[in-house]
Every structure is written in C-alpha cells, then in structure tokens.
Image 1 (tube, rainbow, N blue to C red):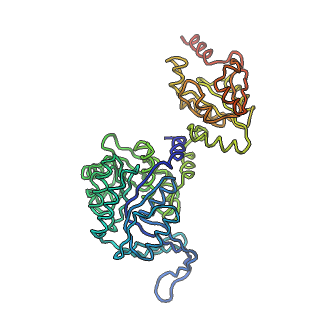
Image 2 (image 1 turned 30 degrees about the vertical axis):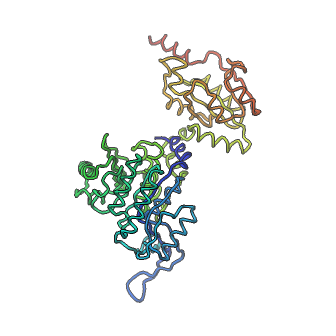
Length: 488
C-alpha cells in the first residue's frame, strides 16, 4: 500500500454508494472550564463557554463516509420529537436523503450530552429509547431495505443496541446483500455476535471480542482463539479486532492473520474511533482494495480520529498526509495517472509550463541525470513517464529490466530535477501524454522531431517538442557490457 494508491482511491470515491443502517443519535457537547467546587454539593461547577451538536451513533458513520467523499444513504427509526427534527434538519443541511429515516412518536430520539472541561469529560447524560422498534416500524424498514439494497456498493450496520437492528432487520439486510453480492460490514454490540451470522466482516474492539468469545485476550494466542470462536459462530469471511494501543488484527477465513501496529499518536478521545474504522474499511473494500489494505487504511484513519476531541471525522487530505509521514519524500512524487492529471491541471492554471519526458531508466547513470536536468530547465515542472516492467520487457527483451519498476520510480523521484514520476504500461507514452497535455515534450537527441511519439498531439494545442542531447558514451548497455567483461 502506498500514497499513490490512496490518492487514486480518493480521486474516484465519489462513485461509491454506501448504505448505513443503525441507531441514529445526537451528540451534544458542552465545552467549558471548571475552576471551583459547588457550595451545594462536593462537585465541580462547569462554566459553559461553547455548545455543539453533532450527529452521533450511526450518524457519525455517515459523517465519516461523507467526509471521505462517498455517496451515503441512511435507514433508521427515530422519535417524532424535537431531537428527531434537529437530526433530520442536520441531514437535510448536508444534502442527505431522509426518506428512509422513519419517525415513531412512541420513541425518544437518542441524545447524549457530554460536559467537557479542560479537555476532560466530566459527565455524560443519556436520553434515549432502548427497546426494539415496533413491528410496524420493523416492517417499514425491512420493506425499504428489500427494495433498495441492490443499488449500493457496500452496506454498513452500526449497532448501538438502541432497538433499530432487530434480528429481522439484520436478516433482511444480509439476505438482500447476499443476492447482490454486496459486502455487509458490522460494528457489533452485545455478546451475541451470532445475530450477525452471514455478514462479511465484524469490527469489535478487544473488550467486545472478549465478551463475545468468553475468552480473556491477554496475548496473541488468546487473541487467535477468541477470533476463531467468533468466526465459527458467525460464519464471517473476515473479522477485524481493534486493540487500542496495540493496533488491529485482521482474521480471514482463508489466509493468515494480519497484525497491524498502531501509529504513534497522542490520544485525546477514542469516542467515535470505531465509526471511523467502519467507514474507512467500507470505502476501501468498495474501491477494490484487498482486505488487508482496507484494514491498513482504517488504521491510519483511526489514528487521526483519536487525536481529536469528541466524535470526529477524518478527511482524505489528513490520511494522505499521514501516509506521507510513513514514507520517504520520494514517495510523494510518485503518482497514478488519474491523480497526476488533476494536479497538472491545477499547475497549468497557475501559468506554469509542464515538461514531459519518458523512458525505461534501467540502471540510472550520469548520462540519465544530465539529460533529466536539461529537460527540467525547459519549463517549470518535469513529469517523467516511466515504463513499467512489462513494458520494458516488451521493448528490450526478457532479461530487462535489471531494476524493478518500484525501485526505479523511487530512485528517479529522489532527484531534485524531477517533480513527478508516473508509470505507464503501454509500449508508447501516447495515452499518458494525452491525459497530461504537457507544454513541452522532451526527448533524447538520438531521435528526430518527427519520430517523437506525441509530437502531433502536443503541437496541436500549441505545445512544442524539444530534443535534448545525451552525454556520449553513457548508457545502460555500456554498463552491462563493462560488468560482464570484468566479472565474467
């Protein structure tokens, strides 16, 4: 997993349709300072300085998905009360559909009030209904799910045991999803995980996994035994157990367990971190990432979320920046074609001239470096199109390249004269040139202008082709011949 893959994911995330089903609630925060003790009782007096109302429960999952850029729908049951109307108003303000949020005048819309002073939560006050939704509401929810589930890329169940996710609702979701081969991801609660039988993945924390398995998780051995029992009871394909400061552990029906260490961060508040994990997993899976890659993405996102106070969301730029910290500077220069095209458009709008060149650059040598430095001097930014390994083999034979594409890309990206590196798999860079539309197309002096691929295209919109001389006697073939001569 690398930065360019994640950048590409977020570049296409708008096409992912997510359905969130579960317990909606409001999270109220009263921020203040506590500097004195009440004369009425031995308790702190909090002077409230600021009030904030956020979507909580399944609403925080929705928030996270929206922040990541996905399309989101939500299905739930709330009370026909002041808190319920405030919740609906918030959804409408965000442009989210509310037609599958059913109102029941016999229920209370959940509202959790947290009083925070000096970055510490002093007390929490809960106002809510916990009994299962009525048979009438259950029927409405199940009918809507049966009619609409097939149109989503992924379905998320956010269970807070407030009554929306009854056994019948859960079974309806899993049955509808199975028909459409849609993954179902569950943030579970309680000890009876068998109620989620047939789901694709569960994301319990360590405490929840211990309760469900009846095993105290103290080490890897006990963790593995607990995971095995849970997967056996639930028929899961995957199980992701979040382990706080010890990271996450992913278990799959096929394949070895994957243990992902946490990223070192200062933790301010873990509330809502599970929602961030669920949302990040969902977009990763829906975007085509492997399960381990999706879990890795979720780990990065959760690490950012716990560094914020209160139930918080994470945005793509934060994730990309966090990934950049775990890689060398050169990694940030290596881009996928679609991501780079957007960057180049923005750079072009700033009036900067883009230079493009391409090649295999197998066994980088002084001749390459001098050529690239000259190419860079032709404009304001140099993009290097790098032949993939498969492309090099087709051009130069089965014995090449000597250095694989990932290593070649990182070596080249480390050069100051190169601004971006992008791999291409075709025999020529024409498709890449078409996508990037450079102002200057640079090629080695051993070419003629008419023989440069992309010349007609670049000149058609006012660009130019420039031939750059090579340093005599410097080539990969010469280096290979010298090695064979000296060491044969």
